[in-house]
Image (tube, rainbow, N blue to C red; front, side, top):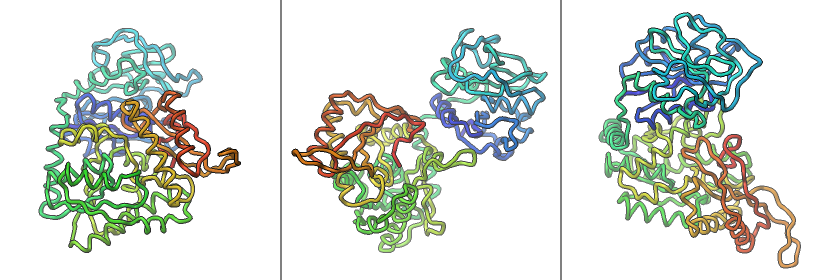
Length: 506
């Protein structure tokens, strides 16, 4: 399969580069900056992008690549740090400057061929840099400039490009056109679409599993459901699904999941009641990372124990997404939070992992689900974390705290659905803090928990903005929650975007 490789130098935007390229119809992957030359030289790699990054090329611990990569007969696009590295490696001059550029900047295009084909002479781009290109290498020509810097360059003979700005972000007006022009130079066929992908994934699963059996992790959410349907279409009854009721699910979730898998997907699922075990393991635990690790370990232990009743299973299926892998940490990025399906697995479990969605973003999983025949209203539902309500309860997990979050979450969903506002929000839920406040209930003093409503808009979960829910809906939610759910006396609304916050609180 044709692909564009994005080499990761740690930019906060590197996932967006991959997403933008995929949106343009070409498969793309994010790999380590020091990926082996032989991998990049393979026939299926049609082009390479050197991402931006927070480091300076002058830093002692700066990231570098094999300079022989520049001699590959493949187009290479350096973005910000990637351009600085290319320039430094090929004989140009990069220097630290006092004239830093952050945010929207106007550039002037000097050469409207190649990268800037079908774009205007003057256009706004998104800059984020302190170093700048002081002198281009001799074999390069300047394609665009801004007030203070060389904004874009190209090698006179080779398909080597560099841009000081970020074409992958929305603030760069013609960023998609610029990236598409680069892809055209890569001579790709723009054939990345869901119909092709679903059949490819089904074939991959068949080839990997063969006559073996798969034990599937089911949470009832979109990711695991799409993964289960995909695996089932590939291997049929070789798939055995378990739905673990860990006591950390939304209100009525257990019965709804069991009915959906039986009636809609025709997949055999066993419900395992493990609430007591999960609550016991989580007793006294307050650290969010510990919660995630414990829940991941409990999931695997429960699968192993239950699977013994049904014979040998060679594979453990999971709905791990591309974003799960990225957020669990790479060599160029700090761990934001571990995901129970990538970071909490025991080292010596008796299964091999099969994760058919681990190269897909959330919106791609939704598209895949529709292609597989899953009801559109379900695949477009809001995400639900693998660790469940455990990461929406600050501090120790107790059955009473779970009750509070389940009841308030149900009220919030009911209000948003009734107002037909759910299509405008990526994710919405309630968070129970570990803080108690003084209040008044029935003319008496109360001292109960502070509850927070969290709602965000997003495309893939990598970045998000807080949702602008109308005040009357927030008022209705707050009034009902305080009146109908014992244990809380105050409701707040989280207006933090991602970054700097994450969508979930833990």
